[in-house]
Image (cartoon, rainbow, N blue to C red; front, top):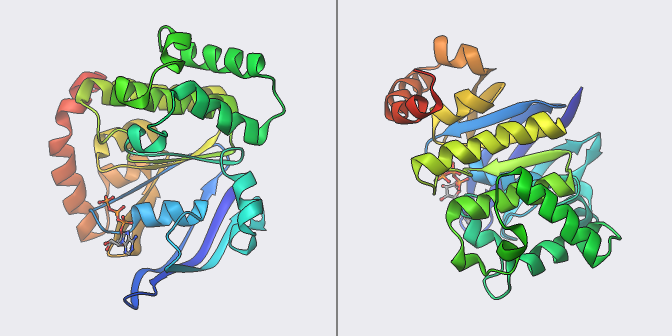
Length: 268
Ligand SMILES: Nc1ncnc2c1ncn2[C@@H]1O[C@H](COP(=O)(O)OP(=O)(O)OP(=O)(O)O)[C@@H](O)[C@H]1O
């Protein structure tokens, strides 16, 4: 069953008249992980944000985004806010930008949870504490009392993953969640994503520059170039038998670059 079906997605920049996404169609199977790869500017983030309906107002999107059969493109902003977090959860590249710099982490987490659940303060704290421990964050209570700038990028990404564990969304969209991290933290955060999938069985869209990471986590891969999807394959096939010339180029260059990651993962 497909939990998400994107049909004929087109995004137009109304300021410049430039088409950013031409006519994208793809689906996400229930419980599977779909990676989106492609060079900078190919439209990966734009595609993710369009599913969340988070693109700037001048970027006009058309087409259908069917989540469990319901067209997200037709929903009001109010109805969409209810879907964000609870049904669709986005984890961004830079943990720092996801949190309000003016308040401690715990306040941000509680504000998010209050939007979706009728839990007491104590319940929220207990659930977050448990989730944070399960992503190997030590001293969760202490961490919740810290400001974002007092924590490392890897810790902030783990907190986002812990929040996702509590929210239990149907779909997690992770846009380059490891790019801003050093190699060791990348490895640890990818491990947490793999565990998150195992524990929750949620469906996932995972954007990454790093094909080593993609190979570790994704079932299927979409390749984007200049606002278009040029190839879709099972993860295994795309590495062994890439079809499109661009995909071949991407696989050969990126795999060479990400050898250090595979070494750490113990896969070479
Ligand atoms: N807010 C915006 N307004 C207008 N155009 C934008 C905006 N954000 C991005 N773009 C343009 O849309 C295109 C796709 O950008 P997008 O961020 O989706 O690429 P990407 O594949 O995610 O790249 P990266 O890997 O660098 O994040 C680019 O040409 C970019 O310049």
